[in-house]
Image 1 (tube, one colour):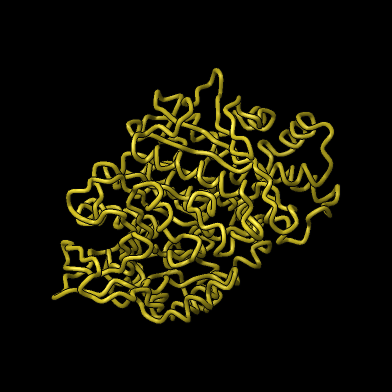
Image 2 (cartoon, rainbow, N blue to C red):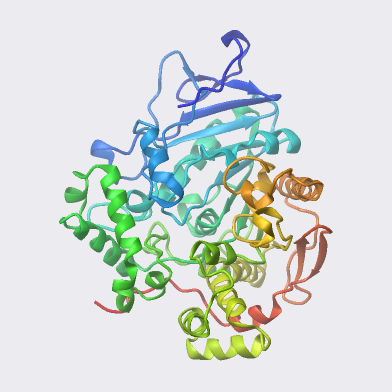
Length: 513
């Protein structure tokens, strides 16, 4: 792993946690601690188990290198990155603090990365917390959690939602230790994007997470949650790829990279099971949180509508063109046929053919490309995000809503305000990591200005619970638009909102055997 410390050890920051002392590094005025274990490695006898607290150590532990990521799917080369980082200490976290020390009392922001619950690691350069911590006066924490079959496979002998349980364990570590890094454990904000946004939504609904954070930011909430039957069916197919049964006893003998490869194989061929797995198969989503009745009792929308986490301030939103990135990856940008659009409307619109009619009525001038992108964006990200705010408001809680509409200039401007654009803007990392391609060369002054505005709003929310615009209600429906000239206005995606207003976003079912 890369070692970041260069200054003499005597001048490097030291923090004392419940498990032992850590020596980090100082970078651009920020104290940084990397690769801090928050749970025991989930291997051997602990594989597929709920996380257990990390063991204590003697002396001062070096905390200058990221810990190895959990086993990864192959998308965007993440499996190769995981293989290059040897080791099984997957459950580690990283801390950036502008003022380390028990008396600082700074707000804390805990990041949960996305990756469709299949990939994701906190060591990616786009998640470097230095600029956000320094400019915003906050302590930033990022961490790894188990993904794919290791974290979300539903099989006999293992608790459901192990990836979510890892997230709870990281938040418990923050509660117990963050004061030593200058953070205030009473002012913790959890924030995440895509599957990380879905995780934030899940945490709001989880009894085990109650009291671990007081504010939540859910960016582009991935709206897929599985029934136990669907999750078990997919896990069974993954095990069958290896000639095994979907049990802890069988799968614990399989090398992690082989297990990830089996998940990739099933994900790539999910169309074979479309009759049984429904929308998850048509969208090739093999893993999602499971509404198991225990770890996750109900969906986030049910939970918030029932008043769960009402005292947790919520900031939630999405980008305008969520789907466009995926359309480009599919090779369909500007090439969607009438038949493909009709199929997408029938599969993903609420109410099947009725939803298709509502889309055509709501967007009478839209061609096949726009209809295809609209229904995919709405089903997977935009409407799950909006409906989370509406559920919170209906139960008497407070939510602030935003939409990112700035058309990014990178890649010739072809992707607009697509999925993932918010990540470099919120972290301020406009020139590193894969999402920086969306920003383009430079970056341009307007990108720097928009990033500064979003960072200021996010950190203000973490500090005070108010990002600077009115809370969302079902009367005015005011939201913050982030563009070259940010503005507060009525929610602009009204046609989509009306199409989806009766949809409950239930757990996706197993439709046949």
